Length: 128
Image (cartoon, rainbow, N blue to C red):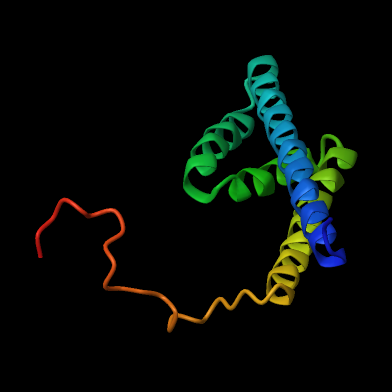
């Protein structure tokens, strides 16, 4: 049986998973819409947003792509733009709640005194 804190921690992890799936779907839909806008109207801005969004996924973990999708949708579909803003705000909120949950379980992010630096981790094949 889990404690009350453990249940909240699992719930936060499930919400992170749902948020990740929703963000991925939002990103794919925005990329498809950008490509459609370019192929239909030869909109160079949509092509630029499309290329930078694909590059941004690999560089910044899709944060740049979310921001570009929000800008792209701002004058086209205001509801999708607000959905992107909501996804970013919920991500920030869940990250704060996740850090609070980790701290409540006693996880100390600054405690390097308990780390054993003498024990080799992945470099067992090297002779020192």
